[in-house]
Length: 117
Image 1 (cartoon, rainbow, N blue to C red):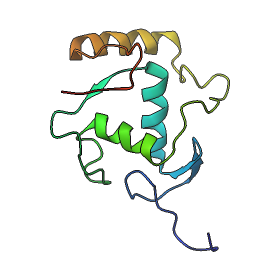
Image 2 (cartoon, one colour; image 1 turned 120 degrees about the vertical axis):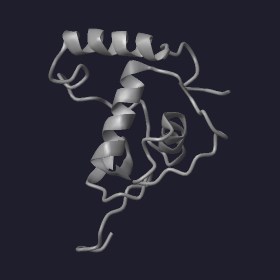
Image 3 (cartoon, rainbow, N blue to C red; image 1 turned 135 degrees about the vertical axis):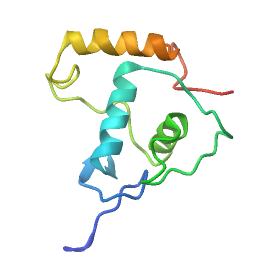
């Protein structure tokens, strides 16, 4: 990429900050992908399973956003730096997220990354 040219997130089109999980992405999509793979949550598209992911709409459908992350080549086998897997809050954050997922009706995936309608 030529020097000075703006980098664009391959997932949502926002300003990218670098290569994350082997793809040029913004901080938002990097964090979303990291959290999604570390928690192993199944997302279900409430619409047509073909949502358009843009900077403005990227929070509307987590299932299609994760699908696009995978489609553009983000790799879940990338290494997470030591100490980053649980975030800064550690185990209490994990327990809080489990409670939040339970309340939201989200369950960990056993084999599939995405759930269909």
